[in-house]
Image 1 (spheres, rainbow, N blue to C red):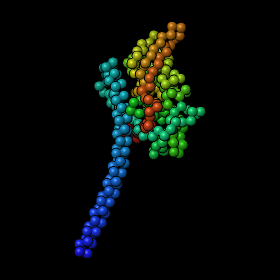
Image 2 (image 1 turned 60 degrees about the horizontal axis):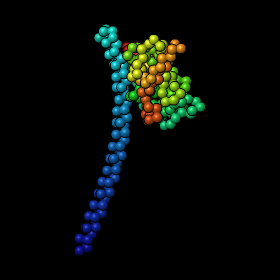
Image 3 (image 1 turned 180 degrees about the horizontal axis):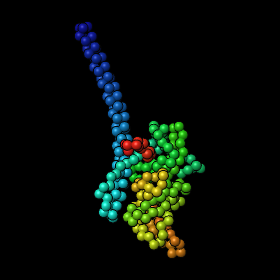
Image 4 (image 1 turned 90 degrees about the vertical axis):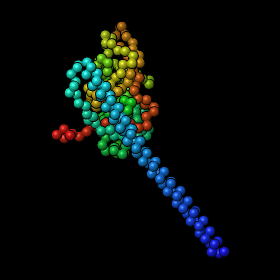
Length: 242
């Protein structure tokens, strides 16, 4: 009887141990799975932004092909690396209207680097520290971006309208601008690469007593919902072009 009783106790302890070990292993597997999924999701977001940028470029190339009929030799290559950065707060308002960014690749980031998401342009890096970067967004009073109207290739200058929208300036009254026109960076800048989506025209007012139209633009990016952005860093190209 003693042997039988001891056997039941040992068997019970063994079952309890196996259950405990199994629970711990299950928890460890869940933790490992969480970090794997987190890394995988970041890779997906990076690739999504890269593909969106390629799509912006290819849209522009298609329109060029339709207009000029001589783009058969067109070759496209993204000459920028995308550095993911987490939005951890807003920048001090007495300095700049923008975002405080954190990235493990902070040593690769340079001032004046463009910042974007899959939706479009966010702004540019204006200040760096050993751990953080400050991004000036398009709603900063001092922000200016050269853009091109995708439909007719007209050039203009984007600035803040004082609210939640943007203004497209330097467009004469004689130029055709339509609601729904899409604006992209022009590339006439050492900061912003060409063909990043900036916004969509939502309002047009012809000023008969002035030279230029008043054009309201909705930003392509919702600045209040940003959690992660991508900093564009020019790729290092050697003499062979690789």
